[in-house]
Image (cartoon, rainbow, N blue to C red; front, side):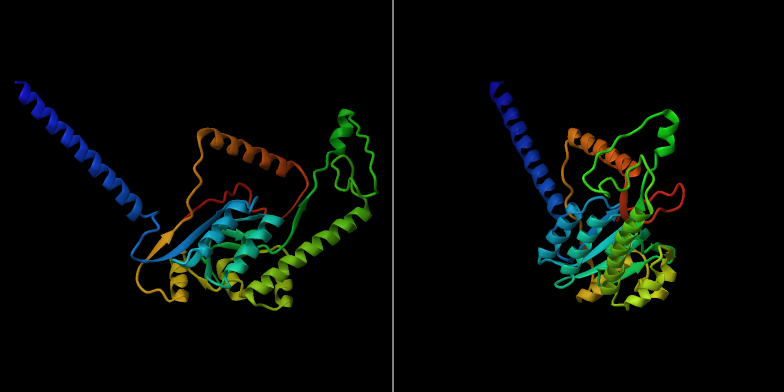
Length: 305
């Protein structure tokens, strides 16, 4: 009887070990050959998504650099669905793309909206593919100043300011700007606008005068943008992938490689969400200068590939 129990136990142990082994092999196989894996028998194209307002550049530029250095990645597709955003972050991403196209083809795929800073980034790519109804363009600079003077006067709140220079509190919400201050801010906006126009002219290989004519903040459909030379062709994300394949001499199927997402624990997730909300509240309430399209009331920019 004891011998029989021992035999059954041995069989169970062997079955358990076999199940664990097969499970491990299956897990490794899925990891290695799964859709997000970098191991593939096909040529590879990197895909970077830029969704929503552009508020920082680190993650995007790091992803671009990583794909640029990866010799197995034949080309990069930027999927852009953004109304633009911060001037500095937009320019940093643009610059990294311009450095990348010197050694690897980059194709921009425009989604629902790729306006202002969203288009600024796209202009650095080798080719731009947009849907006929994509909202793009909006080549211009936006600067907001919150004015609280009338409200403060009504509730009887005053503010005493000591400053080292005449313009140290320029744009302060507790008082109206002087004409001289408006002139200074106008010159600042004009210089940042000039940088935008030059970036588009350089990226698209178009005369400065042609860009200046349409750089008044207006938006275009993808179809209109193509006629103006701001877009190369009309099509969807897959058409952009096909364009990248053709430019890189790839035949047959390709594997799309997405940058690995950073793993966050629950605390990090909650902290990042709270920080993002606080940042947006601060941005909406304070003075800011942006390459950003204000959009239509109630419009939300979403989407990813």
